[in-house]
Amino acid sequence: MIIGIVALVWAIIPVLGAAAWWLALVGLILSVVAFFMAKGANNTKNGMMLTGIILNFVALALAIFWIYKIASTVMHGMEELKDAMPGAMDSLNKAVEVLKELADTTQAH
Image (tube, rainbow, N blue to C red; front, side, top):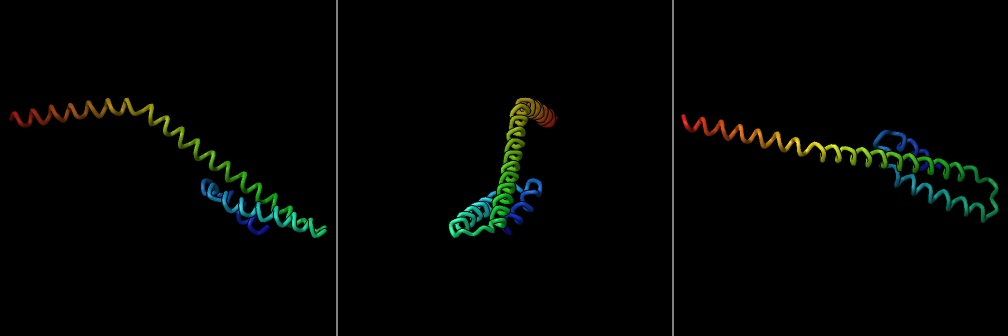
């Protein structure tokens, strides 16, 4: 349950929450193992294990959400960069031509 609390707090932080996936995954695995071990021993007090499962699942979902948002933002930026490149290259070529003309005129004097 403690791992779930830490993972959930970490996953709530914008952008940094994407790195909480590994902690949430470890906590989820440990909580599920503890739940089934307690169930096998006929332990009826499994509230802490269920809380750990829920907290870690929510933290994992939040971390996956942040990973998705970061990846989609990067992909969108790459598309915009790809669309802007032809115009930027034209501007760069024009600037190079102007600099060459300026250099030629300076050498002619």
